[in-house]
Length: 141
Image (cartoon, rainbow, N blue to C red; front, side, top):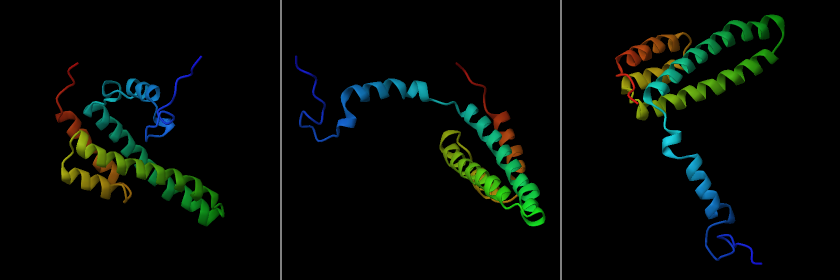
């Protein structure tokens, strides 16, 4: 009984990790049809993420920092600051992807990137993104 040889054992220069059955499975699972996201859905997710990131900024400045300096509890800034940092990076990445996927204008992309840095600006950017969402044509399936 002979067992099937992997691409690596057959003398192929690819590693055993890239064997044919694994590639076929990944093509089915990560197919463009399955992984496609509409621009309207992405814009809605971007609006929600801007709102969440703006709230995390307010929690960081309004709750965690006073707890650190007035109550002597620096762990609040560590936890909330880490969460805010992850959300900030996610919003920045989503704006860069949104520039290509939606497509966002250059002005709105820059406002979103700069707005993610300053408190209260993400809420203003949310209003601008909602206007873009209202102007988009409805999805046709």
